[in-house]
Length: 192
Image 1 (tube, rainbow, N blue to C red):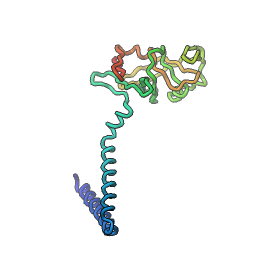
Image 2: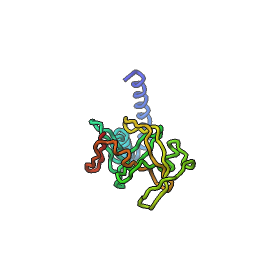
Image 3: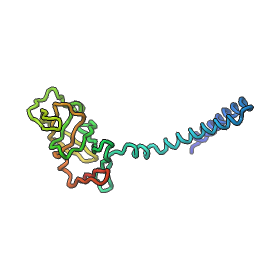
Image 4: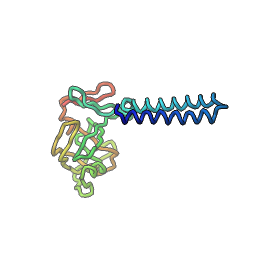
């Protein structure tokens, strides 16, 4: 600790003593109630400090995120809806994909296409794709820069879906770049 840190600590202790002294003098007839309230506020403070100190561990348990293992494999936790989600950077924008081994292509929603700098209104929707919701029109695009956990790919082919799509899909056109795709418990492991 530096001299400034000691000075701040002494100031905070003195301030605490003054405030506590005021409450004791002001409520000397009800010291039991004051002690009870002080205990409650002390426990709230300790709880807040504990949550603040452990937040990174708590957050990873409540909302696990993709990570890279020591072996360089990408590990994706299963989301509460049962799907595996992966976040990649396309042309500098973070795009979250549903990992879909049943999809052939990388499929961008119209919103995600806009986020990566593609104007979906200017595309020619000459292709089509069969989905669980029926046949939708698609337009072929090229993704200039696709980055995932330190891996970079350029000039990837993808399609933009003309229909309503809640999110983008990461299909086999990209997943085939991995030598191994494994589901172990509630984790999907992608190894290149």
